[in-house]
Each structure stands twice: as structure tokens, then as C-alpha cells.
Image (cartoon, rainbow, N blue to C red):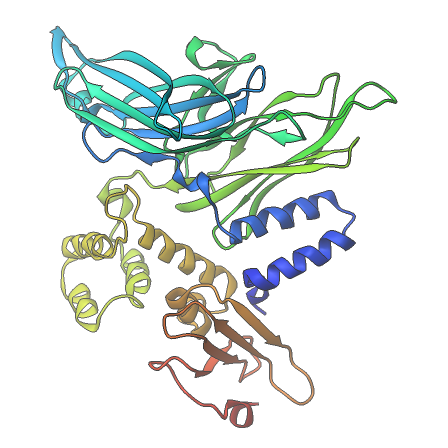
Amino acid sequence: MTNVNNLMSYKLFKKNVILKLYNSHSSYMLLFLLFVASILNGYSTSLQYPTQSENSPKFLLDVCFYQGAEEHTQLEFYYSVPSSELLFLNASDNNYVASISVLLKVTDSNNKVVLSKSKEKKIGVNSVEETNNTRIGLIDQIVIDLLPGDYNLEIKVTDENSKSESTISSLLKVPTFNSDLDISSIQLASRISSEKTNNSFVKGNKMVIPNPSKKYNYNSSLLFIYYEIYNLTISDKNSESVFESSLLIVNQFGDSLIYTPMQTFALSGTSCIQTKTLDIRELHPGNYWISVSVFDIVSGKYVIEKSKFTVHNSLTEEELLPMAEDDIKKYRGQIKYFATREEIELFDKVNNVGKRNFLINFWHSRDTSPETEENEFMLNCFARIDYADKNFKDGLNSDMGRVFIIYGQPDEIENQAMNTNTKPYVIWEYFSTRTGKQQFVFVDTNSNHIYELVHSTVETEIENPNWMQDEI
């Protein structure tokens, strides 16, 4: 039997969450349900970051919020500029230098300047090849303190050699950490080390190197995590605060992929720093969410913080698209539900070099956000294909697999197991289609756990309103 029951609509899932909150005695289950429900309900301001400037020199920007002094919130802005975006001048033999200036300005709702901070940085490389490298460059941060509230943010980066400049402007909602149990933003770093070789990135007794892109390489990465916990409750019994904490990584379908069991900590104070390292080499390219959950044992309060990150494949085209016979068969299966008949015929006809170029152009032409580095449409398709292969018998070649890949996750599922009078059947319903509510009916006609599509209300699919009489 497939894991089709894992695909809940948010409406039904939210109802189940409320019921389980009243009945569950497991702090992990409580926190897990709340976290997954928040993912299915979407994000608000957190989706703004990381963000990238539109003009050259293009730079990436991310921000994290921490508790500051005297009711202020501390903001850390992480930014990166690849070498390929800058003009390098030959300073001496084997020494090329680029210079940038960064201006950060914060204004209030009346456009009054609340804070302004500038910074200058130089980048040196040893060869012409390095000046054109998209994978190396400058990574830095700017730290400021603000009172909680809503602001307008503007960050401008200027290439001092070419005089080109680019700007990121956005709304900035600054939270407060001065009242109840809370967690700072989760900083997803490129490295956390006890060796303090760069004092700019030192926090407590650790050096935390930012990763403004929140991207990690497929099959070779560790995820470094930094966060802070605030306002724990001191026990009258032993003058300590005691809390439990865990980490959870889920994919876009809410499947739990990596979970660290609850650990118990005892402190003499009310706040602490936490750092973790997770092995994510088994995660396939795509978008993921990580959550940190904290349960204050003394007060019985809990809190969850979450952050989105991406696993991407940085291989060359030849490495990324090998053309062995099994590889070609896999690629054909990946495109068959999205390609036209003419495109499939062309793919079958051209040689291996042509097939590679076809695939690159095929997915690029369907990129819904070509201005971003990632091809979101392709990643979403691959995530659906991967889910179908893992959860449906015959994978993407099954009727369930095909429908899931094309139409996505059902909004509601009815699952009828086998009894003495009927064959097992499953009904998927979609509420968000442009044509209104749509339905797909699958029946295990041969009692082999392969569910065949017997009826659908979608015009281009098989239609049999009398399926119950004919099939069951």
C-alpha cells in the first residue's frame, strides 16, 4: 500500500493538529505538528530573504534577528558578491584587487533616516581566472541595533573600480525578544569553528561564517546551524532553567527526512547559544525547511523557529547530465509528462550531445522565475517525481505517479481499504485548479496494490461516472 495518506490537505491537517494538541502528551509530536502545519500554511516575511539585487554588481543578502541590549533587537545582514560581478585591477604580479563600498540605510514610515552605516572592503585574487569565478568572492556582514517595529531598508553596493552600483530595498519587520520564551533567527552558516581566524564572524566562543545564499551542494555538504534561546524560566527548586530541544528537516510535501531526538539541557541562566551540524548529503536537490523546537520544562511553554534552505547541484553540464543508456531512459521519463509529442520525437532522434542541449533548453524554457539562479519549476517537478518513485508502486509510470507529477499534491484524499464487498479505492480531490474542484478515482482492480485511474472530472482524462458499479 502506498503512503498516499500522508498527502493531507491543509484544512484537514489543521483540524487534526488541533485534536492532537488536546490529546498528545508528547512534546515532540506537539511541536512537529505545529511546525508542519506552519509550512503547509505558507510563509510571510521570511520568504523575502535571501534576496538578490537585479543590477550589477549583483549581490545576495540575508538577515537574522537576535536579542539586543536595552529592549533593542540586533540585526545581522549577511551579503556576498561573486568575483565575476566586480572589476579587478592589476595591483602587482599575481595580484588583482577589487574594491567595494556598502551603504546600509534604515528609514521609518515617515521616510526619516533612523540609521545609516557604511563599509568598505577589498578583494584580492591571484589570477585572471579567479576574477571571473562565480563561486568565489566576498562574504561579509553588517551588524546594527534597532528598536522593534516596521522600517524601510536600503542596501547599496558600489564597485569602486567600475563605479557600477546595485541596490536592494525592502520592508523590514524587526521582532522583539524581550518578553516570553523565544528563539532567534536560525542562521544557516557555511562553517562553524572554534578557530577564530576572522574576528568579524565571532559569536561567543565560535566563529560562524555566513552563507547568505542558504544553498548547499548536493552530495557533499554539512549544514551548520546557529541560534540563540531567550527567556527560559528559572526553577525555584534548583535555581536552574531546564529545556528540551530538537531539530527537524522536512521537504516541500511535509515529509520528515532528518530528525534529531529531543535533548535535555540545564542552565544556570535564562538564555543560551546553540550550534549544531547536520549531515545533509543524502538530501536530493530541492527546497527544504529546518525547524528548531524548544520546550521549557519549568514553565511548560514551547516555541518553534524555522528557516528555508536549498540543496543544489553545482556540477558541470557534462557531470550533471551523463549520457549513459540508463541516464537517457531516466531523463526521458522525467520529461514525458511535460513535453509535447513533437518534443519527445526530437529528443529520441538527436544524438547524445543533442539530448543534453535539448534537456538544458527544455527545462530553461519552463523556468517560471528566470531571474533567479534556481529553476523552481524543474526542482518542483523533480521533487514530485522523487516522491512518486518512493511512494507509489511502479513509481512515475503508475497512474497515481503520473497524476501526482502533473497535478501535484491532492487537497483532500478519501481512502477506502478492501472489505468483503468492494475493491480498495482512493479518491483524490483538487480544489485550487483554475477549472474548479476536480476529482481522480483510483481502484486496485487486480488486488496487487497498483491503483489504476478509472475516472476523473478533468476533461483530458478518462471519464466514467459509473465507476462504482463498473469497477467495484
